[in-house]
Amino acid sequence: MQEYLDLEERCRYLRWQIRKAKREEVRWTEGDLRNIRLNAKSRGSHVLDQLPPLEAELSDCETDRQELLELVDSFHGYEHDFLKMHYIEGMTLEDIADDPEFPYGIDWIRHKSAELHRTLDFLDQWEGRKRTFVRRFDTEIVDYITPIPG
Image 1 (cartoon, rainbow, N blue to C red):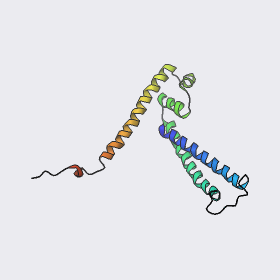
Image 2: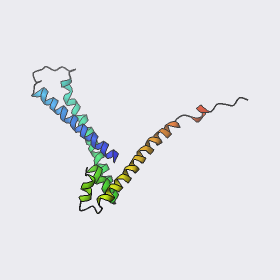
Image 3: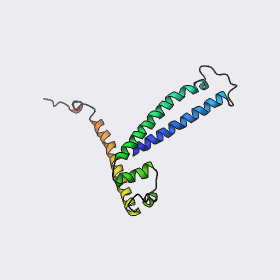
């Protein structure tokens, strides 16, 4: 779920950057900066150069987000439905309980939410510890063994 949220945030940021670059282009071509002479080193002369890489990155980000969403949609069960409704669709716990398609009440939803939070928190901590553990073994063990004099 965190990966999906990160991708969603990245896509939103890229869309914002594209809108900003397009507004800047309009300022240089039609707006308050149109009478200013540009040279090759000026920022305004490179506004259009920013758009293709940003749009390509946004396209990749949207593709990744869509693939991850399809993966999440392939899971079955009420826990997965709950996670999707809550984290991806942004529904509140009360909204989920009121959904006629969801067969559980607010008590089950609150209990499951707490349980899933604990599980997801544990997995996040485990991932962090795993990376630390791997880094500890990046060096040769011989580096730490001192020969016994004799």
